[in-house]
Length: 406
Image (cartoon, rainbow, N blue to C red; front, side):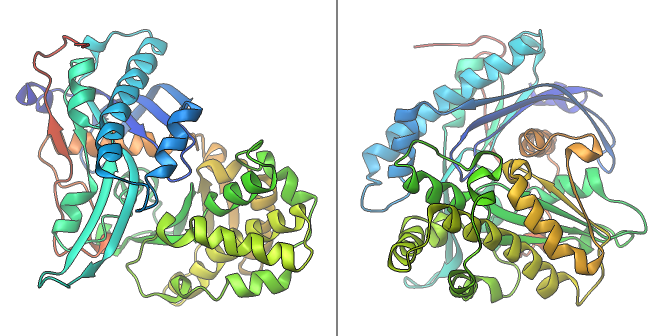
């Protein structure tokens, strides 16, 4: 089964991504060809399916240790596998193909806990991470080999298990003679630094801090759940940044941590947002002012990351923004304002002819393709691992090309 895939000059792969914002499932069906160093990617179809409201609530319950009981984690692991499988079926149908036309699936899964800093309380420096969405279920329901649970192999090799997308960004976005910054703004923001002519060993990346996560949570709280995000940055555009609150938020120790580093909901989640809302109430801030402040916090954290971790080494010419944050006009305005003093162009994936929505799903299609062909698919210089791992656990269907439902 895998030997046949390894020998195919063109592979059709579905990449699945669901991020820390818990918006839904991104599914991208791509054709991959070309060499390992310069792959050619053709996007055949893309879909973004929101989580059912009840499922989204259950996922959020897994972000808190007191509500993430083992029975709930186990159930949701298999339920999400079913939903990922449905997304595969849907995007393949959208492309006008059949499941038998698809060679492979790569699923990131839904992160419910990420602890990249080692804990040595029992004599071993243990790092750990938990992504759910059972790959065996996806494989069995679709009849397609499925690669999932990517991060653990890098963490076993001493890495942070994140960020992983820089591996594909180096393959697809590097530009001779110019340093390019790629900024993804999902729930968490992460930056990849692509030096122009220094090879993959010079690439580095890290999480810049909150992306949409805090913005979404503040807007949801202010609207009683009526809105789950600030569409287009409309609420933030009506407000004024409170410099006192912004100054307090800028003091979070995460921003000054040494590289490599990554973060998540464990730091910028419920308790963090609760403190912001408390500040707003005690200081009489409007909802629009709170939205504007946390939106500018995201922009500030990205600019601070450039000044702190990139500028001392090299000057960049361009910041390319992807992820849901690229559709937030207020956030993009704050970014352009903060990067203007350095003369850095701020553009979006769409400006380059790519898709902000599909970018990470496409990345996991490429990562899965590498795994299936036995190729390392991570940059250890980015994650801090001692060596490049071949990431991803492979689940094979009981019979290739024969979906099953129970």
